[in-house]
Image 1 (cartoon, rainbow, N blue to C red):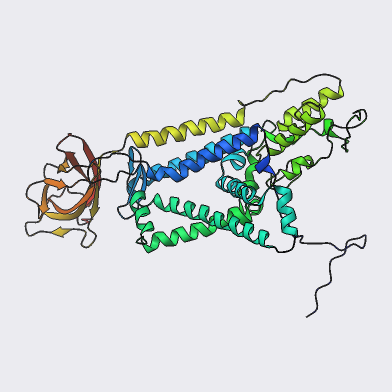
Image 2 (cartoon, rainbow, N blue to C red):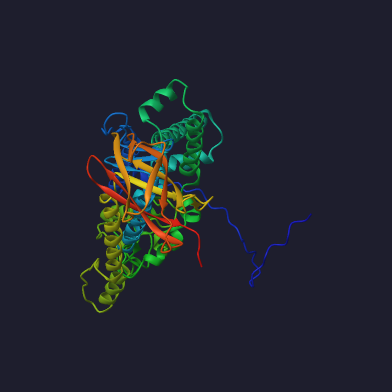
Length: 486
């Protein structure tokens, strides 16, 4: 089958519908500047938190996991320092996720995509992998030259060493993730002695390969094509959002500069392209704000370094707002100076702040108002009721009592505002229920109402559980069903 004819534009030139993206060789590993230093600090802090948090201990008493952060799937628990989350309290985690999302939107509206440039896991691990490349293979020019050169022993061993270290980092990353779901020291011992569970090994293998691929190969393509955040982040921008910007009025017309040349009739951009070679996503910020830009600030450091060398003021490339850029250009056209102004408090940020306070308050209230025990009542459906020989009506219920504390508890269960009703426990003497620590007790009760013409076909039934140690109570509503006399 013959190849299809290429598309041709009006000028008779072939149109390329797809162009292979060239490999990006960032020079940021050797770059110096305040934003590069900030990225190193943030990277080191986040990696330390991720890798070492599973090994932190938190004393919760006997017979309870002492790992500070643990997702205990077999026992359906989540431990986060002083907080213990049961499956019934998953709404707390949902609230925290909503709170984190709103906080991210609020930060984006003020500071732009700083999350992408400094704290996103894709950025953090890619920075680490690029640093490994620099340590083993050399700087940007050396890596480009080696990739273009024929195959040699030096090229093979340096490439092989790089990939081995990447895989080790990926293995550590996968292992650390699995440690959040097991007791970390125990699982580490089992891994070293080849006794780890198959599930843990499988997850580690998958996360090792995904880290290796995403930080070693995909890199900026994740930010450009795969991550949805890049697609809708502009909806959170306004004229007062900080973005990486190029001062076009000051920089154009650009051109090469030689020592001793004057600056009359030309811009301050010397077209050195250092802002391009340090960019981790391979864009030219002089073309304006672009979707792949992650606001990492490395082009700012590179340009400031060049400006220092040629004796010009810094800030040709900078963090700035659209409002400031326009006002500065207008002031220059009038021969005036302009004082920069960063407006943090504005309607958009006020809305976010109010939403953060409301959601944060609800999450905090949910955490502080949690009961140390819960009761759940389930009415039998088959049969809905039983008519006894004396004419009274019986309903049966299954009751679960959850003891969320770390010591045994005794509870009394009784009816509220139903003096004519009788409640009987199945297999339990009296109305005292013993519930072990961190456990659920299940039992059955029957409730009898005497025959009466005033007895409604359906009425609300309230059961109350009382902690005999603390006196705290919880009420649960259910239904009492009888025959419909209509």
